[in-house]
Length: 71
Image (cartoon, rainbow, N blue to C red; front, side, top):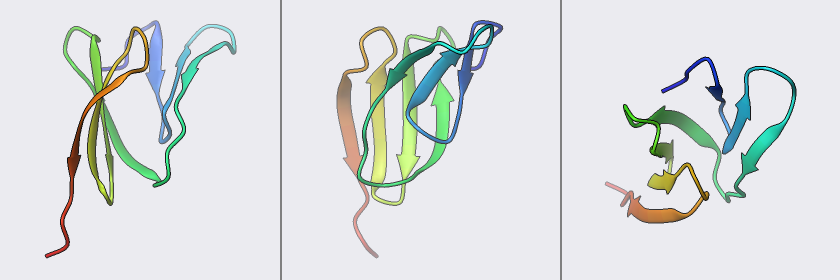
């Protein structure tokens, strides 16, 4: 969830709204289609055409991945 402190974008990039300091960039092999923060800003989910990944915002660790299987 974007706040007056954090902004989400279409990549794995979280930055402060004041200034231009990048807090974290996480490399990926697939373009990010959607991003959403948990209500308490502890986690972020990113969606790609390959699935969904859940991340800890404090350290950038991807702790679970849900892979999309072709239909």
